[in-house]
Amino acid sequence: MSEEDIRRYTLAELRKMVEAGETHTDWERLRNMTEEELERSIADDPDWCDLIV
Image (cartoon, rainbow, N blue to C red; front, side, top):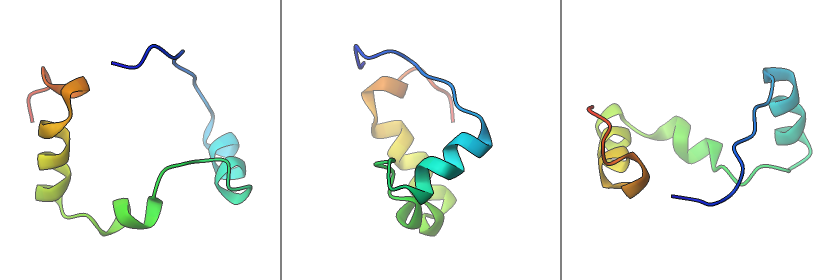
């Protein structure tokens, strides 16, 4: 798991970050994922190994 701090943002703050290009999330790829692909991605992520999907 990452050693970085967990940060919380409001929806308005997140929208501003996206508009300014300050996020590294590939939102287009995420929007186009099927439910099955998302579940498989979560299951393969070691940070989420204890999550029951």
